[in-house]
Length: 114
Length: 114
Image 1 (tube, rainbow over the protein chains, first blue to last red):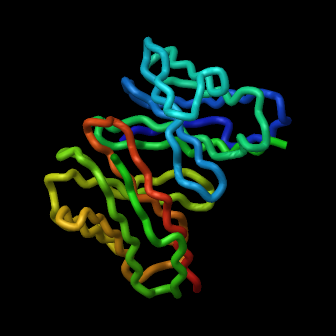
Image 2 (cartoon, helix red, strand yellow):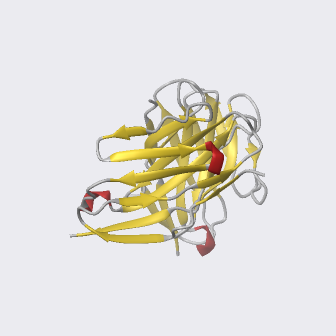
Image 3 (cartoon, chains in turn blue, purple):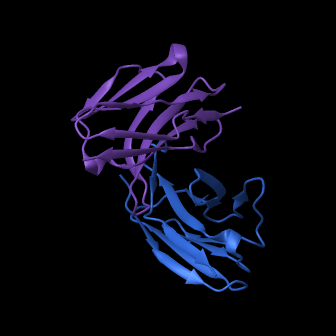
């Protein structure tokens, strides 16, 4: 199984500011995934981050709001830009397991925007 | 379309009772994987099991068991002799190999009362 370290684990931010979330995997992976979980809701995929190429965003998510970096095969960042209270959620990063058929998750970043 | 339905939004039982969480999925892919994850109050997503579409054998792991039935597109999860520590939100997820992304159900909040 992959071990994924995500930080910060939680933060309280002022509206209009930006927060960058970091995700570190203990092994090299081609794809990493970023999810948002709004309060009381399920997980929604934001984007898929491939090393060496632009991230692929899901419908309803745009690069200007959620820029993603993927500088190498073990690391990715997600920035939540120009935050509003509606961005208050848990953000989780994910990476596939060895067979590319399972997904392991970081511990999540609990973001509150005030 | 790819879809996962967890019809039970919330379940509450008394400790030591058996409880079954239902999961029904839809996919046109013939090759896919099904997952169950546990999300305790701390927010991290804990991987419980993966099952591929060609393996309908039921699985038991301690107090946990899973029943996969392709004929009804269901992948149900049973906890035997429930304990308070089992209290969490449980997510069923589908990974169609063609889509290369996880699709989550809405989750079932399970509360085990002492």
